[in-house]
Length: 166
Image 1 (cartoon, rainbow, N blue to C red):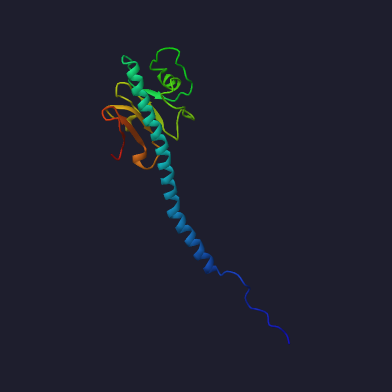
Image 2 (image 1 turned 135 degrees about the vertical axis):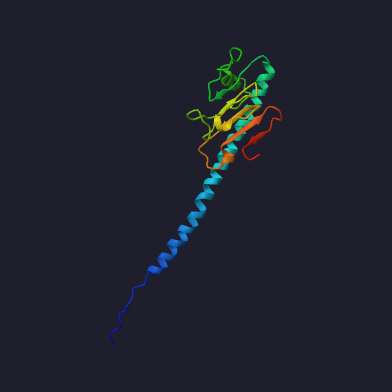
């Protein structure tokens, strides 16, 4: 007896492959934006911890040197220098040297994509989109799509962290 050959090979039909592709694309459409949002929130949370620490260090600096006037200074130094009284240009390094502030690993003058500024006068300025009256420290990252994660500041009056949502 001669065996009959199968007319079709075992495998997937074009329709089955197309259904799998549609499902994969649909899952990707929802997963990628969610992943990017959670990644942005994680970066914001890490940077806001540094911001609160910077504001506390600035307040400690103001208590030790009440006559020190810094209108707005960028924070990006990792080189401690506390051999003399701080000035506007050496205050960041001085805070690190006195260990008012933990060492922050800045890359290209940014941490987690954020730029930081501080002020003993409550006039910290992080750019035109993030200038808040009474800010002792602020951070800005204009590359974030979510507006709340673009700018944050610590108020001199209440010492609390604020962002564009609140």
